[in-house]
Length: 168
Image (cartoon, rainbow, N blue to C red; front, side):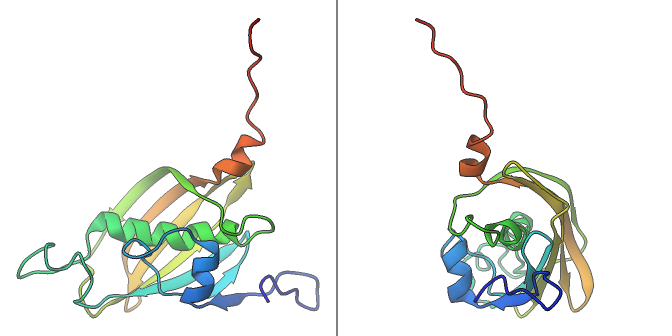
C-alpha cells in the first residue's frame, strides 16, 4: 500500500519497483530512465536510481569508442524521479506531466556504462498543479549532474486556468 501513515500521522517513506513506477509514470521504454525508487515521501522528496549497462540504446552512438550517457538523458532521468513526488499524491496517479522549465543544468562528469546513477530530488513547492525543486545525480557518491525543475500536471493546472467568455 502506498502513502502509509506513520504513528504520528505523517506519510512514511516507501519504495517502488519498476512495475509500481509504471503505475504512476506514463513514460515507457526507451524513455523510462529510472529502475527503482528507493525512498519517497509524496510531496516532500524522492530518491531512486538508473543502472547503466552497455546495452542501453544510446551508448553505441554516443560516442563510438567513448560511450557515455547523453546529458539531456541524465536530465530526463532526474525529472522522472522528480515527478513521482507529486504523481504519488492523492488523485495524481498516472496523470500526464509536462516540463515547464529546467534551469541551472550542470554536468560535472561523464556517466558511463556500468555506473549507477543515483538520483535525489526535493519538492520545494506544489501549487495548482505546478511543482518546483532541485534534483541531483550521483555516481559512487560523487555529484555528476544537477538541475532545478518546474513541472506540471496539465489536468490539475487546467482547474485553475481562467475560462474565457465567448463573445456573442
